[in-house]
Image (cartoon, rainbow, N blue to C red):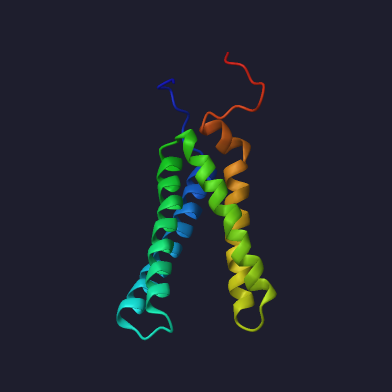
Length: 138
């Protein structure tokens, strides 16, 4: 592993920002669910608490990926890709709903697709020192 890192391209910084945004949104909603499960009156307190803890844990994944992207670590691309792909599932569900949830689905889908485009961008791939299949070390 060489110590000569290329300067971090703006697209890589943007990819880290999008991953961080997803992580903060997941963790924030997880904290909300956990607090409502503990202090509120949900139908199932146990389910609300467990859902909150799960979302907080899931929010940690894109936050670690964002940190890795900023540090130009090649391992961070995988968790970022998976998180963006997984975000398309709730986006689709929200888009198929009715009323006020459709705009939220549009936002979630736009963030996920933007993150995917930024993470697979050639400048990002090069900055992370990821080589394609069959590439040889020079």
